[in-house]
Length: 264
Image (cartoon, rainbow, N blue to C red; front, top):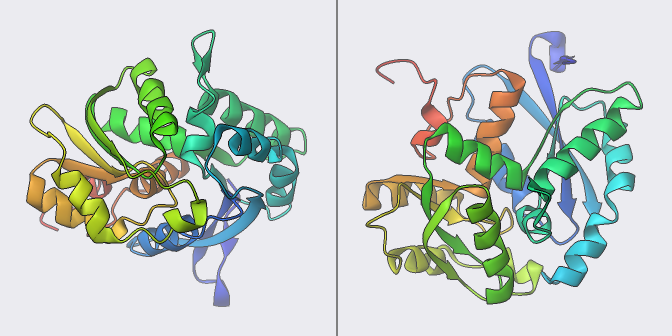
């Protein structure tokens, strides 16, 4: 991993590359807000965009087709880690011969960068959610999603195929991705309160990096008494894990305080 000096040369800065839908604004807000809480590490964020406005299978496939250009662009920034930041774009593509689209995409991104002599850590929002759930031992989850019901059903099916039981879920039925970024927190929390959480080990309060939820994670965890995470907190967890950094980001649920000092 390449480490980059910050201003004055006194801080190590880890460069995070984000491959995002063009209409997404939330991941570039919530991920920096999370990682700036880290007690020792520092980060910079560098984005490239794939055109997408409506969350439909057709537009998601067209968006994924832009991946190679975006990966080349983000490679030029010399990043230490890459997050392919659209969960549904990959989960909607399903599995082929038992392998999920997140695995195929992460491998393709890593191979494309390796051909240029680059070796950043590579993950995706879809892969990060699965990684975080497995790390937490949470194999029974409830979900809140912004998607139209047919798209939400693809996400549920994907998680089930990965061995995660979805005990209950709500879809807010918002197709316009720009509007997803404006869904108010009380609507998200209201959907979470409508879920049957009695058999869930965890609540994914936003299975989408575009639906704002960061202020809700700790509040929901305190209210419901079970592990709460979002696509954003799972992404932060996985990036820290892959970079070999302590997972210690306060105020965003217990997933992100795994390595906090005792007594903190």
